[in-house]
Image (cartoon, rainbow over the protein chains, first blue to last red):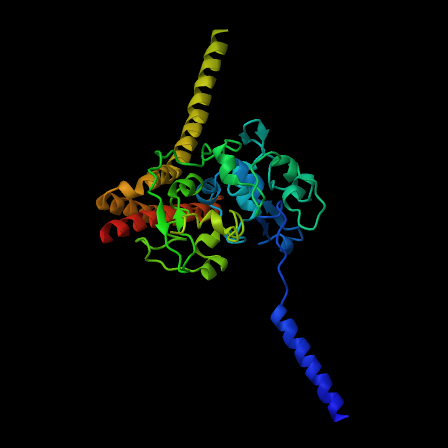
Length: 265
Length: 108
């Protein structure tokens, strides 16, 4: 009897340890899901479905700088503390989604309206978590024929921009400030800690096209001298430094050769 | 007929003086409230060139940002809560970039 109890206990202990070490594998997002952000600061508390924001559509039309600097969206989901009142006042989503803003031949639909009270089809375009909402733009159709990439959205955004398949807006009248042309800082090399791993060539040119200066400095990269701030891949995977963008929106960190580009001697 | 014309003219003059003054008054007060936005557009317009500004210029911009932040913090009115949230973040981003560029130049 004692032997049976001992064997059962041992079996449970082994199973427990095995499960504890395995954990739950996180599902990799599908190309159209990559960069998706759910905004739920106040929605559920107000008995409204949270907002589902797709980065792919917005990044095809606007630079990161325009939204995260000029309009003022934070870099983490929920960090901006957006309220319906802010949109009604013409800020955040309401900067463009006001029913009057036009980009090219597209009139942007209006976001939260004053006194509307009830949810309607327009509200559901954004407040869509858990709902079967048909989007105006179909991802596969939208990116058809664009340069492909293995990971992320499956789109090589850099090549798409080089080939002028996308020409993102970087200025909105009445919101952005007229600035002089950016003086681009030089590209530089970062030596990895692991021997045999190719050097990283950091291109200021490519990054400033999308981000300007103040999106990265000093909030993300605080160091004033090259090489002063030490960081590892672990830090990046924790969402720090390059990981702020290169986990959820820009091409993911798994795409090693996109950064480690210098040939090994 | 003459009296009617005089009456019409006087009425029009009265309307112009009364409502015209109100409209001009409203415009000027809205304009005055938006002076801080002009200062924002001016002070944050140099972020693209922060690295080529002299330390003195950078210090001046940082000082202007601090004054602007104090002004924004005192905003009142219907949109104040939103404007404070949006513009405080925007001005802080400019200020911190100028500070970053200044520290870079001083440590060079």
